[in-house]
Image 1 (tube, rainbow, N blue to C red):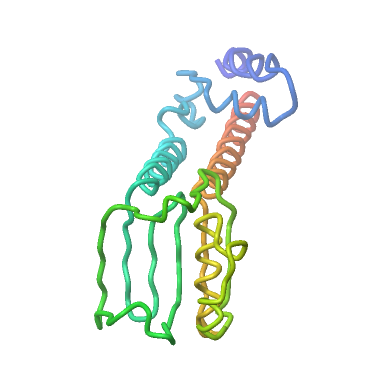
Image 2 (image 1 turned 30 degrees about the vertical axis):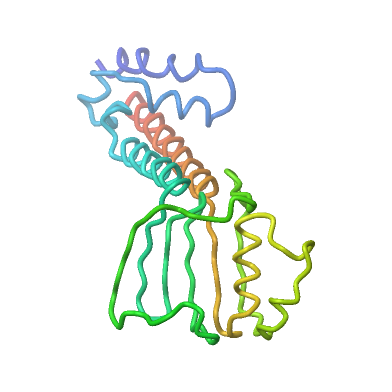
Length: 206
């Protein structure tokens, strides 16, 4: 019985062109009732890893689409986070110049339209940004020339941080980068799962 099973499972992985990642990934998709009956992992459509990755990437795609026309945010003291402009924005801002107005003492949140100057571009694939407060004097803001004005939404946020306290910071994580990272991790886990499945099938036939 085990020898017969070995002939039904092993040839499939050897028929797949390419190196072991290709065979492992294909093996993860391959469903074999006999293999399942002796303990080899179930087919891919029954995998928690598979569906967790699909759900995570679907959520990122939805958040990406939503951020192009809506702004969702939370704030807690000097910390805030938002989903806007094809990015997740995390920020610590003490607002040393008092430009943001009074803040609630506890946790708060709001949602509304993503409104921005029509002259400012909002790239669909923005670059990641890490910025610290520049502590610049506000008077320089009003002395800007046309060439100093922001071109993209990310440029506008960089300029905003230039006038904040040195201990303040801003992180912009583009949704395309989050999607790429999750897809790479998901693919790696599926390849690892398929390789384990192949090794388990091979060991049971020996």
